[in-house]
Length: 158
Image (tube, rainbow, N blue to C red; front, side, top):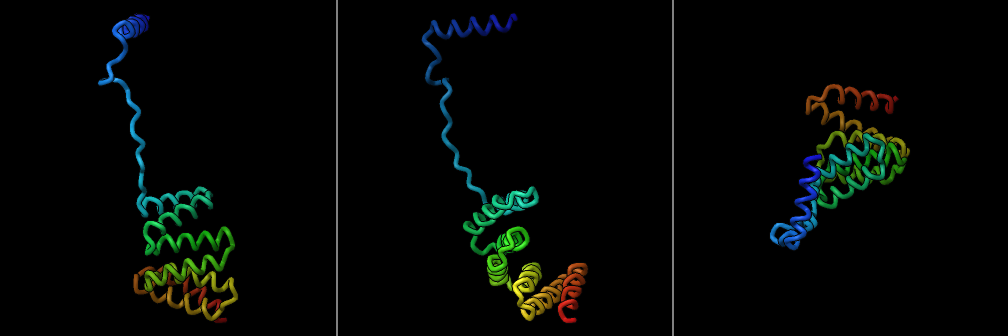
């Protein structure tokens, strides 16, 4: 209680003196414009995707691409969402195409495009992409990914 009375007394004292001087008064802080980097938006898209916020993830990947139009990983992840969650296979393929155009050695984009090509009834394209993915995975020493791509490739060749 002792401190409450002191606070009330202080407020009364300040009022008697004419208020708080402008030099020490609380001024509204200027609005800070936070600019996210493409990487920040990409990571936010990953988190939103994992949380099930598909529209939010698409928006973040799209914003990352707007900042960096050559962000192959963002195209790849957005393509996965278009294909896996939205079943928009042409949009997914377009994103994978762009990721591969940016980075022609992007094994994951070839692998994902192979899946979409298969769903779009483009078996020869799917075979070619699984083969490319397998080749890059092998060169990169990604044994499990290589074996997975080969498994899918063999299924298509039978």
